[in-house]
Length: 198
Image (tube, rainbow, N blue to C red; front, top):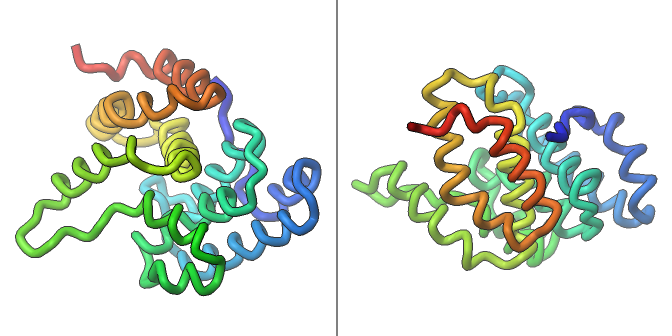
């Protein structure tokens, strides 16, 4: 199973991007990376690592793994959590990066629960709706989850098991229509098969 953890800083990511993308696309992706870093600020992942590492891992999965070159998809990968995890709105994203990027981010943003609504139930409903998402939004989601699950063993065991089960139920089926992701998630599922509930 290939791991994507070598682009944890923009300085590490930029040479690989320049090898694979035209200058205008690299500039667009750079702008999204700068925006995301400013919005997420000092936020950290559950492991304590800077949050921006997750965003750059998702970018690396798309570019170095799946061979995606669309500037909109790559920008959306870097921005995919700004609405969910910061005060940024989809309208702000649309104004800054255009409606296509904002739409992709909207598809991968878990809605806030309504008054009296359970957060876990809202997330389940969101995950069930992902098969209706546009192809490019699915690519962003697949890269987002790949970043999270490639280092699953860094989490406490109960969280590993729950996240494994959720990924197998909702995300692995999404990968089937995308050959590179289908192969990657198959290898991932094999690597972490011990987490399956018996």
